[in-house]
Amino acid sequence: MDLRVKKTEKIIMTAFLELVMTEGFERVTVKAISERAMINRKTFYQHFTDKYAVTEKLTQDLLDWLQRALQKRGELVAQGKSFQQAFTALAPELTEFMTAWREPLQAMILIPTVRAELLQALQTTMRQQLETTLQRSVAPLEVNVVGGVTLGLLMSYLQNNQLPSNDDWRQLADSLGQVLGPILAAID
Image (cartoon, rainbow, N blue to C red; front, side):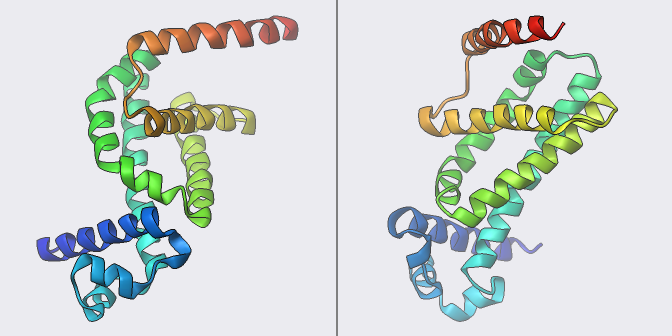
């Protein structure tokens, strides 16, 4: 893709996200996006058909990144790395991602259709990655729990503006052990 096209699309998407955060999705118009991006409407329409197309592009970009990150994590786990080791190996990329996507994510989750699409895509991606990593079919419970952890990580970052530390992970693992331990013991 031409660098100018990428730059223009980025300007349009940034203007769109700023407007969603300040005005709300329903009040965002192509005219407002064009004015905020300092382009004419004709330029907008050369790149997107409407504001929904902007949300689709943003959503797809986010999901593409997530797919690549989960695939890399899966490869690390397949190499025998623990979840913590894989997370640590991915930390620089996660930090870069969170820096670039923090504000867009905050705006995108305000759009009900995008939030629902992200949750559905996250669930689909989780299923694919779990099946690849575990080399078997996975149950909906597994997908929902792992997806919930991933979503919880994203929400925690959005609220705290930082990734979990090693101590945070240890505390989470301990808490999960305390909560799930009795349940797992009762199953046996």
